[in-house]
Length: 591
Image 1: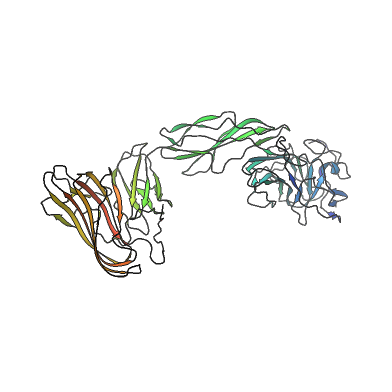
Image 2 (image 1 turned 135 degrees about the vertical axis):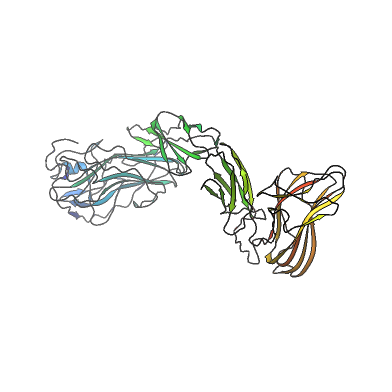
């Protein structure tokens, strides 16, 4: 600004803003095609040097908007947009043109409160490409006489990546506000976004919530030297997993956009545990750095790049809202899935651990990840769900500082009819089958969950059949399923593990209603090395009321190679569905 201006300069003479409207109609909103790719500047009249036909008057001085731009808001009462040059050389001005380049700038004058500015829509752009916008701005509250009064007029620039023209739209990405009064010109308002359509709209806005007060005070805003251009691009890169708590994050070199020179980088990080995006580097020339995190935490990173353009302006590329990359620092954690007794994913189950309040909730695919604080103490891991019955916890889980322990849970049906299906009370509820003197043995290890499981077989040198059975009663259960976990410890090619299901009762609502009495025999696969979950269906579709006798048995031919099977988490109950296919409790089928 020029010191010592006369009382007419800067619009200091008016106590009231009186706009005498001319009969000239308002110009239609202008949409301009982007220039060729060889030109970096995408705006029409970016220096705000050329002005359209006056749309009104302000005490004899024409109200005008720069060509290619449109004013907002167009409501009454509104301030007056002026060519600063016309104002300066009128009876209102003092022969001083407030500008940052060229011959003039866009000016807004008012004695009343206002939120106003200008916008321009640019078409012919490429969706998904980053664009940046900047404009120089100056505001004077009441008078340029000292002292400056900060906080009264707020300056911002914005970009709507959808191409919308509503200055109040939630899709606009606004710059950080600046509210300093008087000079120097603010050249730090800039914003950027990835185009979501073939056009974007840029906005220059001043919020002036207070009137200018008595004569000769006047609130003034000046806009100049705008630029809309394609920005350079950069992405942060980091390892997906890190065993160490310190790891390398890189973010360059950037790919420059035509017409500009890469200058600096910014980088931010975010912890999934909370806290939002945090600044890391600002206007640095570094392209990589080591980051130190906490075990069990997942960190997101993003970067942006600054570029200088031929007109001297600096634009910065937009941050990606979701970030560019993420790294999980391995720590004590339990991961896995939560399934129904049929083996379908269950959402909304809560997995918890003793010794901490941390929990994890399963997603639509049944997946969960429970991050735990480091501890040398054994843990008890449990699962729960508001609609399903839970299996026994997993006890005495010791997890190293960078260890991941996988646990797959199967929830029990709400009407589980099996007593002591996890063998936590040894053989309570079960009838042993020990015809040749070999008996079923409750064991404390190995187990799938809880403290107990059942061992069938394992004896050498004799021919025998060993097993357990239990008769369970169901009432109006849709397509009931028997489910269990089993683990072959030794498989004799001549030995046999079978599941015998005997059903006596009535079916209704399905394809074959009526009395039913049948026995179904299943032979599970023994060529597996670890715990395996298996659901079995003894009946066709329909509601069943009656008794299901569940029998597990191992037959060994006594040739010296024993057949051994461990059994855990036996359940029997309805499956989701029915004639109306109402899935509650909610499970996801067909995953």
